[in-house]
Image (cartoon, rainbow over all chains, first blue to last red; front, side, top):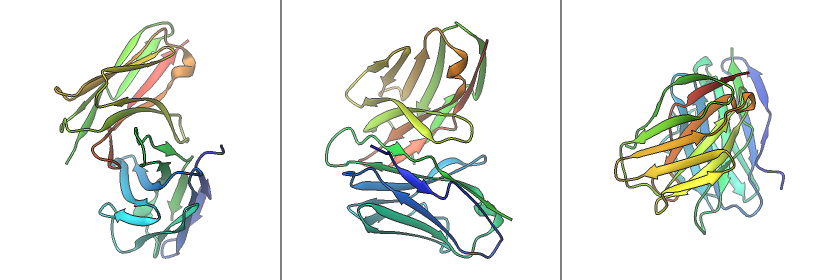
Length: 115
Length: 111
């Protein structure tokens, strides 16, 4: 299995621009998670989906952030407009909630820099 | 809200030493606990997962224990090697999906 795939691996953009991060979960997994990692706050859950449906988006920092999962094999996290404080590493993870132990598998992350 | 704390924040040991990393959590109603490894600039690699009904898990030189009632977990690394140098993260799951991470312990093993 190829594992969780994220693209791009690195993204540098200017403040105000739209940024779209992409994730392909492990085939057969039905839960998908977006996390953000910063030096100040560590790893935080932004949003997660079960069977392509958003379940909890309470971690999304503000309305500039949005996430979609149009099908079981693809999800996007969009930031519009981007700000320098959005600079972080964004991780996508997937798991299967239909059976224990709900272990989450992480992608390599996208390092976002907003100048 | 679940809070996860890891001590120490950084640790430096000579090669060959056995070492223990600590993790504590505030809400004992957890579903499972995972230990991850993160290399600089890389993603997270799952090392061990302990379900709430278990007391410990072992993989090679790694052994993780869980004391749910006291809200503690330890990761024991035997005969440390320079390749073990990384940041180790503890994470607890308080439902089918909510995963809360500690801030990590940065380990350096000196050859």
